[in-house]
Image 1 (cartoon, rainbow, N blue to C red):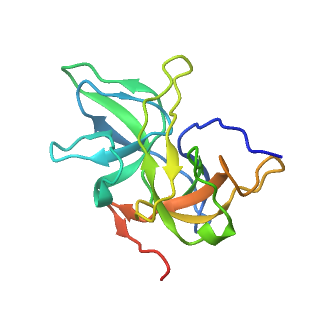
Image 2: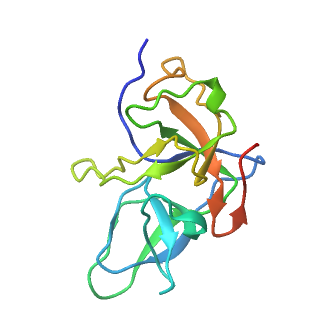
Length: 167
């Protein structure tokens, strides 16, 4: 059975060490539209904003809600920022992950969210870059290794930690 192409960004599934999955509140950079499941980065202004691919250790977490920040004023957003949260994410079109991708890495594919359903459309690009560390296939009867597979990942590059891939 082929996997369904339905990217929804990054979603927490469990905690790597058995802890609770929690969010923390951050200031959202002005004029940003953020969808739940989007990768966010910390910026020097003390706020967070949508991350471009390959941002390295400035990643702070995953947006837990839909927010639109006006050009002025302060807007807060809830973020899953614990680097030990395991996230579910779909592999991008064209990538065909196999079990050999276990313990390798990739960047997120920075895409625009779906403004109709207010959801992220981000995916994982398996390219050996170190943004996310792949720890497995999401256990589900309708999910298998191959194109559009749902993978379990943790941050490899994060503002609060530093992880590297297995050599």
